[in-house]
Length: 109
Image 1 (tube, rainbow, N blue to C red):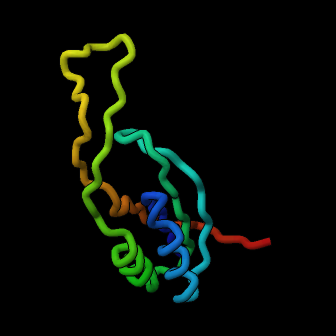
Image 2 (cartoon, helix red, strand yellow):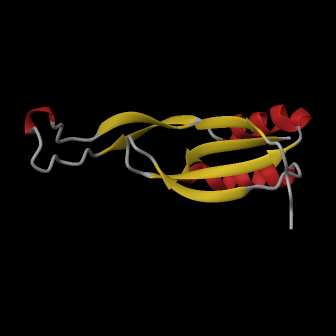
Image 3 (cartoon, rainbow, N blue to C red):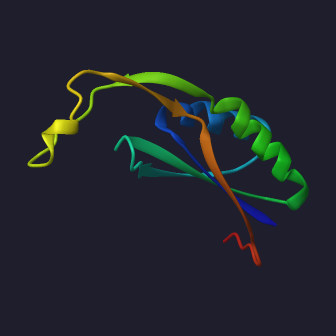
């Protein structure tokens, strides 16, 4: 048994959850926040048999694509204003960070 933990962008969560349900996987959705862009993320936890892990990874890869987005940097509060960029910059967002962990026991009550 494995626990697949995927940290994804909020905008990809509905697509991913629908795709997982469509293939018969149950999951748990947790709200989280990212460090780099300080934006909302979603953490999805999926428990599955060892032989189905690759199917889960393929679903995540298919639904959580990288894309470019413009963001407006937050001005520094009392920090070094010399490195502050006052106009929107393009950054790559999306995709998924995935962890696959072994599970010793699984119980459902």
